[in-house]
Length: 194
Ligand SMILES: [Zn+2]
Image (tube, rainbow, N blue to C red):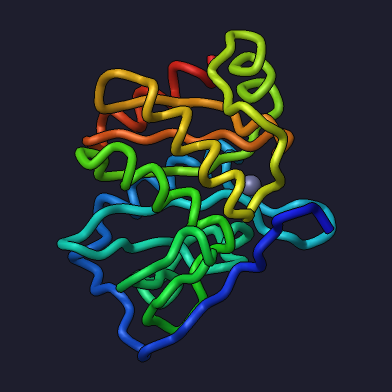
C-alpha cells in the first residue's frame, strides 16, 4: 500500500447507459485503439486501456474490464454524473462500473476545459519515447490513484494548446492522450505509433 492511496469508489445511481448516437465518435476512437492493441487484455486476463468523452456536463467512459472485448456495446459504457477527485469517487449510471482509471481522465477535463476526448492506452515503445522526450508526469504514483490523477493534471496544466500526449511515469507503458477533437486525437496517437 502506498502512502496516501485512496481506493477508487463508485456510487451507482441507476442503469442508464449512453445511447448509440451519443457514442458514435467514441466508438471510432475505441475501435482504432483496440485494432492497434493500445487497448486490450494482459495474459492474466486484466483489461487495459480506456476512452472517454465529454457529453453535456457529463462524461461517458468505457466500463471496467472491457479491454479484452473486440467490440463494445452501449451497455459497456457508463455515464459519470458527478465525482470527487480527492476522494477518488465516481457517481455513475450504467450496467458496468466505470474504468478504475477514470479519475485521471476527469483531472484532464478539469485542467483543460476544451478537452472533448481522453484516452488511456498501453504501449511500451510509445511510453519509452515519451519518457525520453520528457513528455511525462512528475512523480511515480501508481495507476488508479488520486496522486497519479493530480500528477496528470499538473502536467497538462503546463502544456499549451488543446491536444497532447504524455507518459504516466509511475505506470509502466501507460500513456494518456487528450484533444478537443476526434480526428486530432487519433492523428496524434498515430504519429506516435510510427
Ligand atoms: Zn493503465
